[in-house]
Length: 460
Image 1 (cartoon, one colour):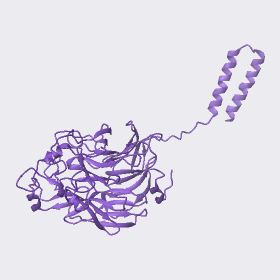
Image 2 (spheres, rainbow, N blue to C red; image 1 turned 180 degrees about the vertical axis):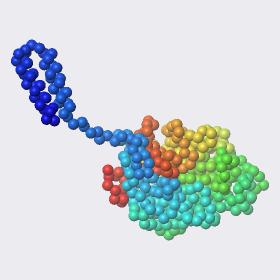
Image 3 (spheres, rainbow, N blue to C red; image 1 turned 120 degrees about the horizontal axis):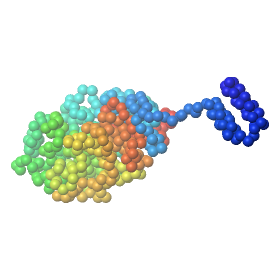
């Protein structure tokens, strides 16, 4: 620094002397002034950049993209079935800000409730039978990982699996596999060769009493067209409200079904209309079920707000599942029927993750418009209009996965075999996380979400 100052001083001295002798040589003056500017610039300390450069490594994976101006600020609740972990991840850094210690492995769905507790589907340690997504146990887990409530429903004949949902009443819905006897199957002309068959049931549990207070069984709403001398015989496409017990989808013959012939894997509850939307993976459909029925009405085809009892109020995604030649099949295995509610953009529509198994090997997230009233028609299209969709090259998760609509209009997509992608309504990727887990689903929580206050997390 001293050398620079001396050089500068001597330069100015000779410049002054020269100007006194020859004031008309402007080019020399300009040159000396330029040299002075260069010296001053060299003395300045370079500014340090504070910009974060992506990708960056987090605790469990890598943030590939993060457009802070367009992404929704907040946390992501991660359900990682590969490690039986549930944790809350900060989006900008991928740091884990809260993690729960689980007594049992994941039965898949775990969601953070407004009061800071987790509602968790967990797997029994020694199941009498199991398929992908088996559970058997539901727990309400406190922020400190202590168990507030537990319900077990698992034996040789039935087991809770995949998804759970808390109703506004505080009761809890769960999906159940129910074993059907050989005699029952023979009586209705079941044509499959599996030794044991399980059909889908939904139960509603009152946590205060541990009683099952409501039940819907798919078995009560079966149709078959194999043998007219047996029970439940009918013409399939004349009864879209019933379930073809012998429907054979793309999986049969290529994947061992092990008796899990329907494989429900997720549901959502519509409080305003008292309806349940359930994804049926092996039928590549969403079934809509009336929750307003009594237990007795749910076994019949009458009663409830829609007058259909437990028959399907509606169905969509794959008209071939009930021999309907009208309407285009959109789903090839599907997960997470997520109703858009609570004033998020798209309120009144539904998001569904279509895995894209079969020939395409391409997953797609669809936003579909729900009708104002349900009229399940015979020999007509019952499919829903596509409002918005997203896919990209290489987006393919053959199992699990789902999508959430955020308050700013972005959509957070869980691609089960790779990670999470947040895209804008214009389909620009604004945040992306890649990990090596097996991700059932993700849930998004804004920084000011009520549930976060119970976890003692300091906002970044």
